[in-house]
Image (cartoon, rainbow, N blue to C red; front, side, top):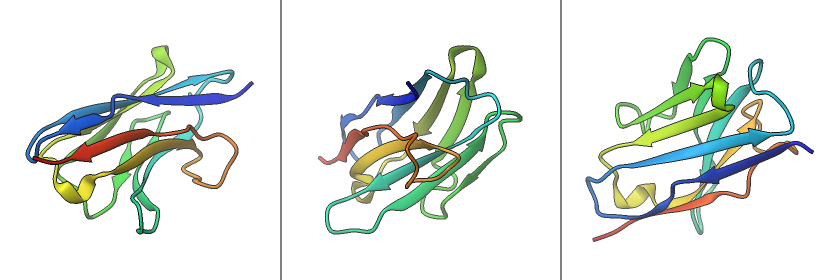
Length: 117
C-alpha cells in the first residue's frame, strides 16, 4: 500500500527552525516529484515546494523562498523540508504529496507547525 508519513512538526518561536520529514512506503520515490503543501485555518491551501527526486531540483513559493529548503535522500525514500526564520504566518498543517499533486491519493496526513512566542 502506498503511504506517505510526515513528521517533525511542533511549536517553535518566531525566528526558529524546524525540519519536516516525509517518508514513503510501498513505492520508491526515485522517479517522482514530491510537493510540500500547507493549510492554515481559514486560508487556502498553499503549495510550498516541489522537488524532483531524480535530480533534487526544487521550486518554492515566493512566501518561503530563501527560508525553506527541500531536499531528498533516495536511499531512505525520504524528502525533507528545512524551515528557517519561521514566522507566525507559517503556522499551518504541512503535508507532502506525490507528483506535487495535493489532490492525489498519495499524500500524507500532515504534521502541525505552530510558530508562536
